[in-house]
Length: 212
Image (tube, rainbow, N blue to C red; front, side, top):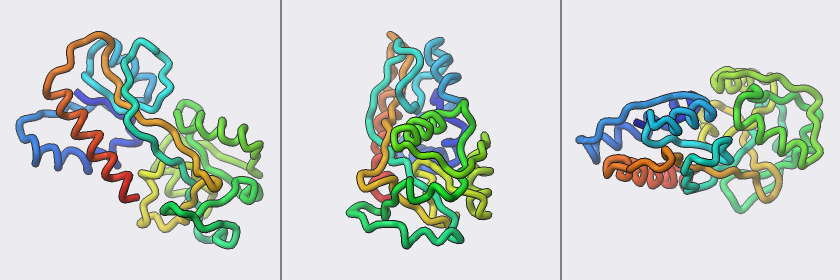
């Protein structure tokens, strides 16, 4: 019984489940989708065995194993022609300063999403204020609006797909990162199947990130 956010499910499940079935045909996975707050609640009740979470958690009784970091990047409509404002990088993406984008509108997750909290903290740290911004709940809406030239999107690197025909940039020369973790019910026994799935998930996700 595995929990993850509804926004990550379309990206991760087609990657994970077919390979899991190929390597471990005897393991059956039940999926629980929800926001981080909801996943924390069902973890505490023991309704699910583990969940893919973004720390810090609201409930510190939940056991959270941080296994990796993900970069948060900018997805910019090509019509904005921001390449001239970017800089080469040793990483996979060029980088750009937020301050150089202050005259463009931004597209943000709504306030109930962890990425919105991360973005607000980033803007505060960089003392950055976009000329305007709009918030939406659905990642598909956000990506669609960015593709239509409606604004710059802040999103995890896992969503930076070339098929969206957007320009992707690291934020600043060092990039901007957040932790990723697997959460477990407090004090409950972890079955061999749960441990096996957890390690499989971590290895697969780390391999995916190394190719981005």
